[in-house]
Length: 484
Image (cartoon, rainbow, N blue to C red):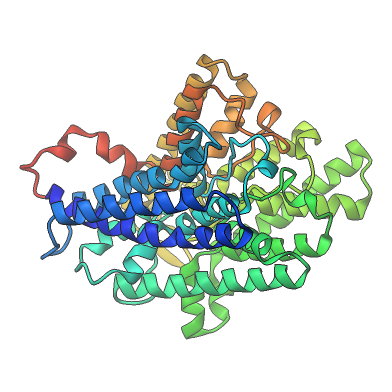
């Protein structure tokens, strides 16, 4: 691995991030907010470090290796989050640890805030907070590849290191073309939800805040009470539609452009996801109707919004679901863990992995009954290789172990057990809200400093799906004689 190549690419990445800071800078100047100076300083710092990295690094003359792709992806996310926290720190809105946690929560699409009262924060800073969702939602590296001069075939290692799900669908032959196609879909959806919210009566800045958060399934809102602030079934309906769209594999939309609407119907994973949403909505609506005596229409409205919000890992709140019966909260916790579809902006374990694990379990039982039979796992009517199935099983084990370690560390730091469990699942799934003292109407501000560092690491591991981050902690990764 050539470290100078990695540094050079990171320099380009930081320069690109500096450009994105001009949007909140413009909003600060428009509203006459004093924090325009904070954004100006952050832009200069990002440009300066980016320029320094470019001068020190080596221009890419070949394809990137696997290790270089992994290093650029993981270190790139860390570097971008470090730049992203500067507006919070330089503006004296948050401390260093809190600023880092807020930044990584934004870029990872978790949406768990450590700001106790967002009404005290300038509009431009809140817009930057939501913009970090948008930059990280599709993927910083994917967007970077879409506009970067060709890096050669090595871009596949960067693309795969950041992609979600057991495999990356490729509807176009070249990675850069695929990244550009995904970005176009991403931008169209963002523009559509922005216009819909603007027409509904929201100001352009508030509409853009929620457009960024919705398409990225992040969940940051410029209001303390999130979507409940609007008391509007119309706005909730708009957000539900686009959260559902963002929970699908974006590669599916690229394929639909070429082959028509039947692609969506043929996508088994998305049909299973929609069925899961429908079933969970009916279960929770029935539960809160019976136990809490909530009127039928209200129960369905509240249940549908929260089911879509948490299963898509967006984390918007339209009602205090922490007051719901334990059974309903258990269903929501399960939805947080499962998440959306592979290749979407949603977090979680992914529906396709749950389906593959289910097939694996059934085949294992059948194998006991018929020892000589050859069992095959299928997904979308195609045979899935044993390597992918075993990879899913390994990923499930890693997710369980990360949750166990995270809960242990949080409880050791003084966090109540159930609250620690919900926070761990929520952060690893990049969902945001938990239960108890970190529930729907609460923030992560009460977390001790050590716990904030832990959950920020878990958020990053959840977004990059663990193995990409864990690879950097392997001694063999850094040995120069390794030819990969």
